[in-house]
Image 1: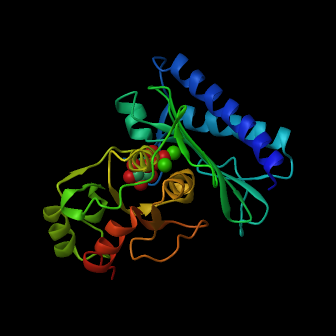
Image 2: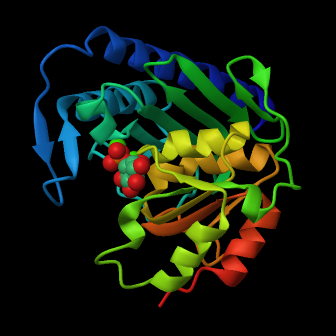
Length: 267
Ligand code: IPD
Ligand code: CA
Ligand code: CA
């Protein structure tokens, strides 16, 4: 993707993200059709589907050769990340969207032959746009975000972790995770992976562990974090797979090393 091409794609993507978000804000109080997917707590609404369809039509109409990897079925069935691939979560944090009408985001990561080039994470209700182009830093609206503070140590950190590690998840050593939770200064769980990545990029949160995320949950976040000098990988430190579900760790390199070396034991 050359620079001119990338700037053009960035401008279209930004316009569509803001327009989709504005529409959601305008109809936020209208009745919702709520369905469930894999289990009774896995929610989806017509707004998730309509928003994804909106992006699919815009992308295919403007850039017919581009591909779409997305959550709600309007994307392509991809076996590789060859070419220009938009990886989109139309609403990340659907449970928050349904229950709280806030704390959800539109997440768009654009990759060229597997390399992250453009990222948008839009906190719709707060109208805050996190965005990045590879090599040019990450921004919160017009403010450039500083590089992550590598001096923050684990015992001074706020760790994002949700309850997916507990209960039925037999893959992880529970005692070690309990040690980790005791070690850090505090834990948080916001219910939108995209906003959690954005919080790390902003430096107000320090690390994020998830036992299960899909490419559309992390595609934009990975780019933002990279632009502030952080790292994102599977929870055991291996490279992420963008074509399937993953465990995920994200944060500064210092905390990543400490957590991955000492606290994560995947069976
Ligand atoms: C979910 C959110 C949540 C994470 C889940 C995701 P969705 O995305 O990002 O924070 O814990 O694993 O599935 O379903 O609201 O798009
Ligand atoms: Ca999601
Ligand atoms: Ca979603």
